[in-house]
Length: 65
Image (cartoon, rainbow, N blue to C red; front, side, top):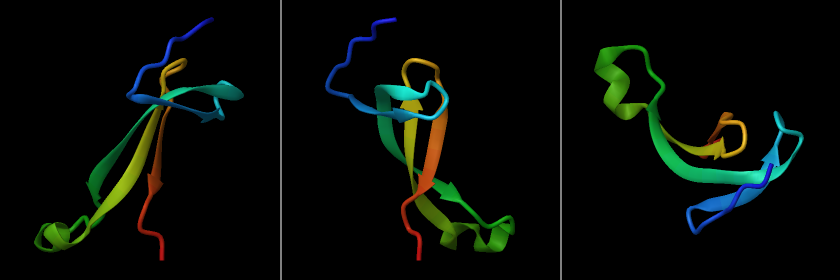
């Protein structure tokens, strides 16, 4: 299957497809605290990649200490 890429995609390895495929890449802020009173202080940035071939979404925490 041939997939065209444009400026909003990057070629990355997809573990599901087992090959290098076009991916959409972005950043998402996720709240990690389950307690409402601390939620505003527990947002962390995640790198989100979505394979354009199979649709698999991968989240990687950007702020690993």
